[in-house]
Length: 482
Ligand SMILES: [Zn+2]
Image (cartoon, rainbow, N blue to C red; front, side, top):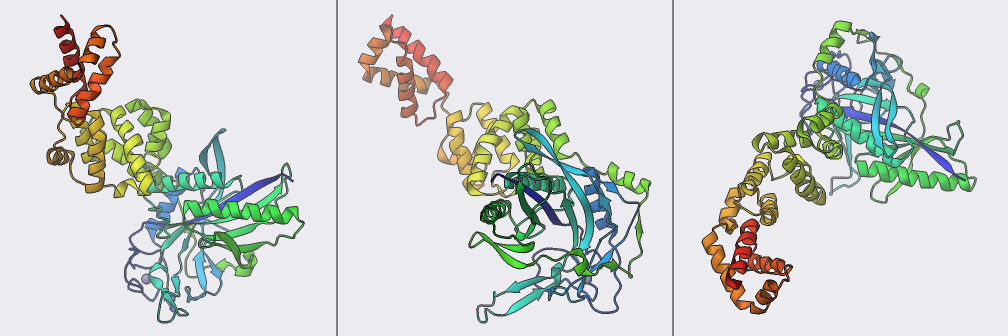
């Protein structure tokens, strides 16, 4: 049987506000456990939440960037459930009146841009974090850290319109890029500030009815999203083919064993007994406020990509790669300011820099090769101080040591030899020790020039200026033959 994969994603993005959504505690990541808490975010009885205006504005910006409609009026709701990391036994979220609805994100597919519609974007508070089995003295012990409790979260729900794990990954990457450009979320999946749950089901190709839906939780890297979806598609295909009944449930991705496993039977909205949050008044937005937010939108990835093509004359593919993260695009423009030959900068970034970063799995922000370093290296190639061949060696040295190009060239004696006197001496030696080749060249075997160039480069450990070597060799070979 041929099945069609149907995937919808729910992304939880932590907002980069300085304080939490309903109290003034700091949201800084990595502080010692339970040092950023107060009675409000600890869920003490009798406290009152106060809504953080910045959190609302961050969501409004996101909604505008994703072409959503922002509601004139929305309100918060209590989502009731029990979990040790949420002592008040309800999460303040939004239910039937979210702040934003509709909208879309476009992803690049081999068939062109595909539009993935959004259902909604709403605001809610994050809950604390349970830490299990980290105490080696007592692996059964669990701890709860409430620093995360009350950190503003934006939940972005897509329609089930993604049809492969690859599309799911592209959607997440595109969405994360937009949030990073907006500076509303750092998109750090390892630290949990950009997390995703996936709904996945299969249906016979051509059928319109949705199959039994399984939700996968705990997907904290692009790779896990892809692998978990691939696993789940295989599992569901096998079940459908053998007539096994699939149950609607929530499964957990187990990264150690590379499988999804049952976590709990799927809960339904009515299980949460949503009701309007009585401690917060309904919120209203005004067209003026929305326009004020629209005016604050930065240049978004698509616009920046097109500008790179127009302004710097680089191919669309390169521009797409260079604008795929804000950090990479900033790096490119920063380097271009110091070395204003945009195509050269783009080539070096696309080939050398990204190759090294991808090989080591690190982000451009962590690279030891700063835009200043790269610009300096390109200047040294440009003014003939080093040859293009040696430049790669210098690049690798900057990448490993973080030293400047000039320092590396000086320390390792990599300066290009362009001095004609010293090159002529080397050439004379080489011609003297290869009389047969010299005779053949003069007899018409022009191709031997390459052989002589190679010998000179070898003798100078690659430091000779190739243009100078070519010119001097031709002169020398022409002379002596008369
Ligand atoms: Zn607090």
